[in-house]
View 1 (cartoon, protein in one colour):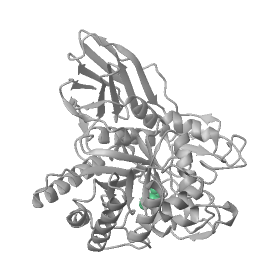
View 2 (cartoon, rainbow, N blue to C red):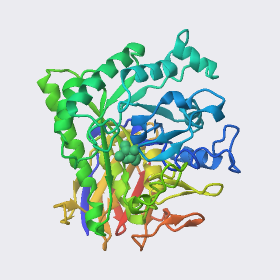
View 3 (cartoon, rainbow, N blue to C red):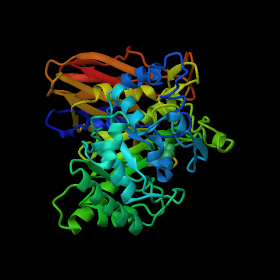
Length: 498
Ligand code: AHR
């Protein structure tokens, strides 16, 4: 099957904000306890953090990590997790996931861990059971230099310098009936706007994320965005999007097309932001924070069987297949193609809980299949996103029409004089041979063509068993100023040219 593409330096979408390669750690399941933190683990450092996990997170070059939730934040008392002695911190009923939270990790420990992995923290405040007061106190505790009650309390906890956390989420999924303290759009819009006002008075340098819909299927989708933005448009910098996909129907062709839903989701949220902008005669542009995205469905049945009020049980431990990695690749491409508006994105989540990295308590840490597209885009997808002109054969699936087999994203890294082409071939049987016009990149040649392919759509990686991993034997080549991209059937690819 043949396709065509034109790539040019001048067709620029935007500089890519590195924060699109962000991720997320929630106090949920074994993300924190047994994931990033396990004092008895053979690789644990002086603070109880697993060094094997730190090493894998560093490989991913994750620039920012959202914390501490997620649904969990909507009933969280941040004060429970600071100060010592740690053994005396309260154990609480954690209502979102119905487990016991021991509070052995809290704000300061997480900031310490984030430093070790070279990431910034994206902090969420509780707008479920709490509100303006708890949010402004937490911000004062984290960011105020000193000389006040909360900043001096931080110092007394051993943190002389402020944490300087820049990006803050005004609650989590407040449109969802499952959310503790669920609100109507009006209630949330007012509370978020007033919380934002108070937080900006504490620290005017912060950036704020207003909650959008929990997913594109919510019955209030877009009405929620429009009504909440009426209140938060001028005080927030971003609106959030969350989306998870699954393949319960066992329909791979349809599953691989689901990034088209994500594309539509992004475009309709942008349209709604711009509608409010025009309505308000505002000069400000609202950007998007896609701060939860991934495949999530494998573990749902299992999770119904969990004994309530246990400590850090395995929850949401999806074991990802080869085909999941392909959709994850396409979700990343979709966000890169919208990098003019999607400035922050968080793969949800990072360790054990719907995550690219898995661990055994006391044992190994390993890479799930979805680790790979995330790794390559994060490491090599830095610079300017280019808008490729694509002509590809298409197919129809259960939920989508005109699905292009070829799903690319293109990044130009001027400093490295490097052109990077990421591409999913959604064709389950045939390779795609793509004529890529790279005239604007005279003298560039293929440095590396990485391919993620597998005969078995359901192949998974387990501890000590890496069945799905990329190889660098891709066959693309440059000839007469043209790049001939050879993308094997049912594969994810990265071609680097210099
Ligand atoms: O990431 C898992 C959960 O998904 C989060 O806690 C919540 O925000 C979303 O519904």
